[in-house]
Amino acid sequence: MVSELMTNAFAHGVSPYVRLRIWLTDDYLWLEVWAGSSASLQQHDPGGYATGGRGLGIVDWVVGECCGAWGRTEDKKATWCQIPVRPELVAA
Image (cartoon, rainbow, N blue to C red; front, side, top):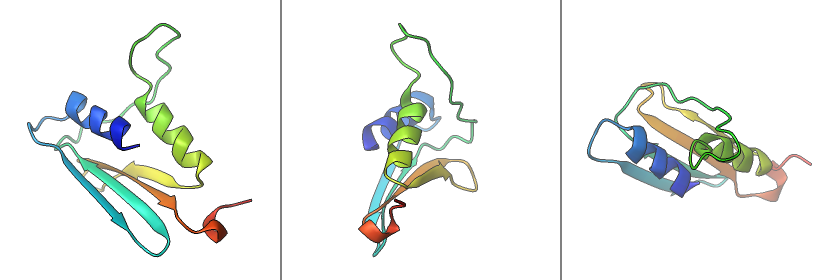
């Protein structure tokens, strides 16, 4: 997750700086990557031989498999994801 979100931040952000925050609550592991860009993120099918373009699809799949969530901050300058850390939060 961190690798995919950081790669997107460096590839598509407008700032020379990228910020990563990781924190743990009683219920979730949170990741937030700030890239300083409010450009729209697009999920798309890059095709079988493309060497890139799968990052958000990977994030979406992994987070979904873990019964988590992901999205953008209100100002759209950061991407976040949350993954449950307690078994009772994971849907059967």
